[in-house]
Image (cartoon, rainbow, N blue to C red; front, side, top):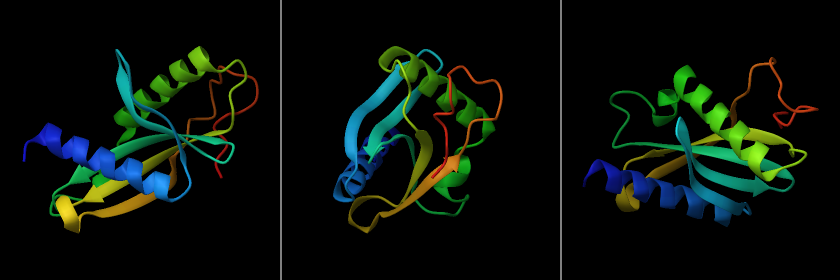
Length: 133
């Protein structure tokens, strides 16, 4: 299976996983020139920016370990752009990571809520939409 096909399969699996647990899907594949947000979903009143990572196996480390500082910075910037465009007053937000290990029927899904946070400064919005739950 090709890399892009595996990525799409993992992302679809993540969406189904979230929907089965009561999340409301807001958007998928929101792209900006500096990065992409795989899934935006709501859990109650909390807006969740979800990064999906997948690996065939854990031989080279767990999928969630690949969301390093540089990737986090891109996700934060993309989320800020999204909030600026669609929200006058941003809701409480968090960054989640969904890790998919394996593909097909045997795939395992792990959901890491509040996987990382935005550094305390600088804030571009009044209040703190990044409050972790």
